[in-house]
Image (cartoon, rainbow, N blue to C red; front, side, top):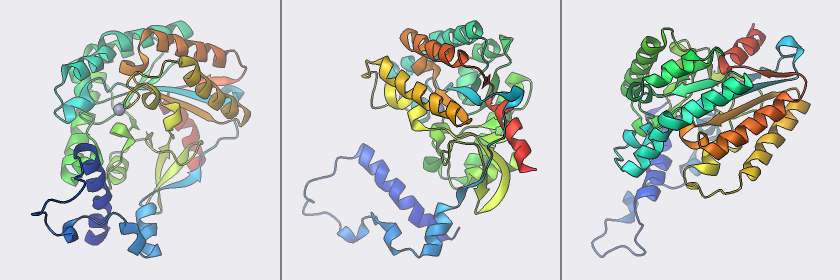
Length: 334
Ligand SMILES: [Zn+2]
C-alpha cells in the first residue's frame, strides 16, 4: 500500500476517535487555527476506482467453503464461541474504573464456570478466545476449560485486547502476536490454531501476520454466512474465515452502549433462534459469539441453555469447535 493510501486510510480513524472523546465547539474561538488543517471527512470521493479497489480488497472474501455435507450427515454446523475478554479491553486503554474492571472480573469468577457447567450438562463443546493477559490474570480459567471432557478449544484473542487499528504499528503488532502465542501455548500445552482479532478489528497488517503465523482459521470477519477463504490483496491465503455477525453476538444487546438496559431476553433469543432456523434450512453454518462477563450471568446462561436444548431437539445438528469446523471446510480448498 502506498504511503498516500495509508495516510488516507488513517483519516477516518482519527475522526472517529475525536468523535468519541471530544466535544466539538459550536463555533471556533477567535484564535482557532485555519480550517485547512482539519482532516478531510470524505477522502473516498477523490480516489480513483483502482485506489478504492486496493482499499476494499486488501482483505477480501474468496472461495465459498460450504461443504456438501457436515460430518455424520448433519444438516447444520453449530459453533458456540466465548471471547474471554473480562477486564482486558478497559486495561488496554488505561481505564482503571473499578466498576468496569470488576464487571469484567465477573467473567472469571462466576461467568466462565457457569457457562462451563451448562456446556457439561448439555454435552456440547465450545471455543474460547482468550486475550493472553486475561489468561495470565486468572490462570485458573485455562485449567477449568481444559478440565472438561468435551475438549473445548482455546484460541488467540490478542495480548490485552488491543485495538489493532489504534495501535497501527506493524512491529508492535507482531511483537504482541508473538507474545500472545507464546503465552497461550505455554499455558495450554499446545499451540492454538484459531485467531480472533480483539473487537474483530484488523489493522492493515493483521492478515499478513496471521497467515505467516500459520493459523488454520480466522474468525473476525463477516462477508458471508458460510465459511470462506480470505484473500489478501486479492490473492488466496489458504486461511479459512469462520464468519461472525453483530446480530449473533451478545455484546450489542447487553454490553457497550446497551449497558444492561436490554430487559427482554426473549427478544435476543428470538434473533438467535431465527438465525439458527434459517441456517438449518440452508444446511449452513451457525456461529454465536458471547462473552463470559456478559452472557455468564444467571438469566442469560439460562437463555443460552434453552437455545442449545432447542437446537439439540432437531435431527442432524453438529455441535463442534471452530477448529473442527475449519478442519472440515478446509478440505474444500484442495
Ligand atoms: Zn473481545
